[in-house]
Length: 335
Ligand code: PHE
Image 1 (cartoon, helix red, strand yellow):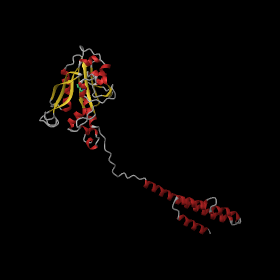
Image 2: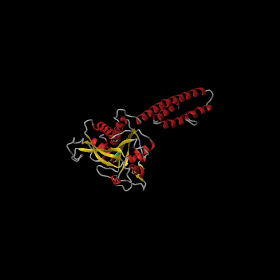
Image 3: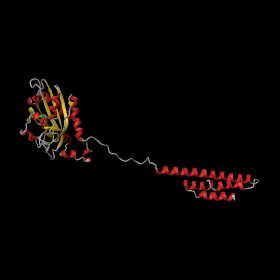
Image 4: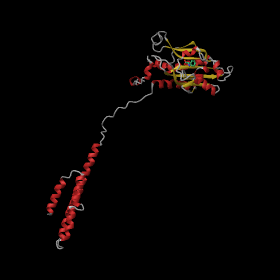
């Protein structure tokens, strides 16, 4: 009978495929109502003389079964671990997924390139609001209501008194209201005009400059702007100043550089003239100084303003300004 028990047990053990199978079998043999448990209990009905031998036998079978269970259990556990490792395995030899690098937008790059040059010369950086009052955007800069100069800058009106600033010049006035000369600042920022074609977008960037002190002359203006342009476009770049008009500067000038695309021979970017306009500038109009309470006898200064997109277009030979704002990766990746 005991031989049989071992044989039957081993047979059943062979069909164990999982930990669940194993625990079922364990209950069947060693559980409270298990085969071995019942055998041990039934010893009491055996005659005292035979009992020790029978007891020994059944105990040795019990030990045998426990030992077998332990072996099978460790095999099953190892298999399980193997399966788990295989399922979660990472092949470190696989080549990785390519994650492209981001980079600065060409306009941001141009902005920092330009501001860096002025900061090296000693200019500080100021900012101002993009939603601006009519007073700061126009009136304080000597552009009264109904003045034809307002037509130069097609304006987005928020209401009768508020506009999206059409230039960064209002920040000149805001800064001068709060500080006394000497002043040396640049103002980078977004500006807005109702305009859209291959050289205009409704939003674009300007950098304003302002220098005020005793004895500032047009020569200082020329010196600073030439130094700036030589830095940006190279020391051999031809630069010329042309008389112009802005209500907030007097005298005013527009500054051209020799066309960097055709070298001055004439092309469609410079419209055959060999020159391209790069910024507006002039001596601060005394009317503006009066508006901020500066003594016009004591102080003089110059101001200038430039469009960042325009400079980037020239520098990178781009013929359509809208490319900067379409966010086409193929375009942006080239910078
Ligand atoms: N604000 C002028 C413009 O947007 C540029 C400018 C600034 C001209 C400062 C002269 C002095 O056209």
